[in-house]
Amino acid sequence: MADEFQSNNGSLDRDSMTLAQHVLQEVESLGAEAQDISALMNRVAFAGKLIARRLTRAGLVEDAMGFTGKKNVQGESVKKMDEYANDVFISVFKRSGLVCQLVSEEMEDIYHIPENCPIGGYTLLYDPIDGSSNVDINLNVGSIFSVRRRQGAQVDDTGADLLTPGHDQMAAGYILYGPSTVFVYSIGKGVHAFTLDPSLGEFILAAEHVQIPAHGPNYSANEGNLWQWDEHFRDYIRYVHRHEGYSGRYSGALVGDFHRILMQGGVFLYPGTQKNPAGKLRLMYESAPLAFLAAQADGKATTGDQAILDVQPTGIHMRSPLIIGSKEDVALVESFIQERKMEQQPVSTGLAAS
Ligand code: P6P
Image 1 (spheres, rainbow, N blue to C red):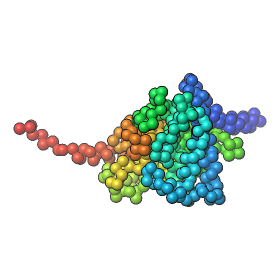
Image 2 (cartoon, rainbow, N blue to C red; image 1 turned 120 degrees about the vertical axis):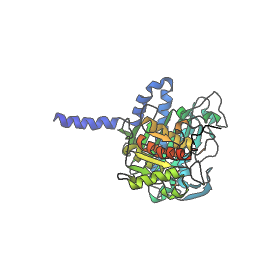
Image 3 (cartoon, helix red, strand yellow; image 1 turned 135 degrees about the vertical axis):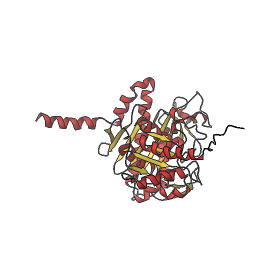
Image 4 (tube, helix red, strand yellow; image 1 turned 45 degrees about the vertical axis):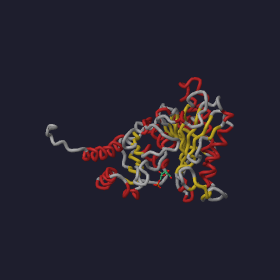
């Protein structure tokens, strides 16, 4: 009987570890900032619940599927869900008093919330719906977020105070809208995952201190772009095509593909192409937050030339190539890059300069 009681007690203990409770524990070391970051993280979670609610009814309500007819700063057609999700984040944070400015994939300029400045000392950078082309076919999509402390007393309209390497992020995470809604975050003390229990309206702890396996079977890339990749990336794809133990997995939505890598190991790569040498993904609110998580989960993230977290941004919508995942699998991709670089080195004749 005692065991049975124990097991019941165990599930109750798990259900009582909500995201809010967990964040409060995690942020204790932040001292005065603890309350702010805890409140900020809970606002992100609330935005995720609102977006998840809409997504579960996307096929039933007006203005959830299809396109708005507008183009975003990236020149991409804006989905109705992109616009809705972006508005959710604005609405949730406008009255939060926490965040002084928002940077979004869907907004060309920084969105200032003057009533929150200068008290609100944080900037939230986010991709409101990553992979929105999946909405109309009921496949997974996600929201990605990054939190930075605002540098300096004054808000800088140009965003120059935001343009520092990803190491300066103080928190990052994502919400994965799949069969269940999962919230993954880190404030630099490990990566933790939560599952939304719709009956409670709470994100419940699912996994703490998640670590990316050193190696995994998954490689995730859009091989339709192979024709316009540098040769070393083709070398990598040829390698996995010729060796046992690899599986190609690509959903067209970065968050779902990264989550698979986080949980099972492997590598996601979105290299630069002839048309877009910097690649398609945005540094500040896609690559850098995921690189922050990867670093916390004993994984790795690089552009192919340098660590993502070392990249010096030149603009809030800057793109970067992304190779991210298990240490050993990222290293394998890098080995092909190095091999090609060696081949391109001028051959030394050994003759002394005459
Ligand atoms: P492609 C979605 O548009 C996105 O930004 C990422 O979520 C995804 O990994 C990538 O672009 C997919 O791009 O060129 O393969 O369709």
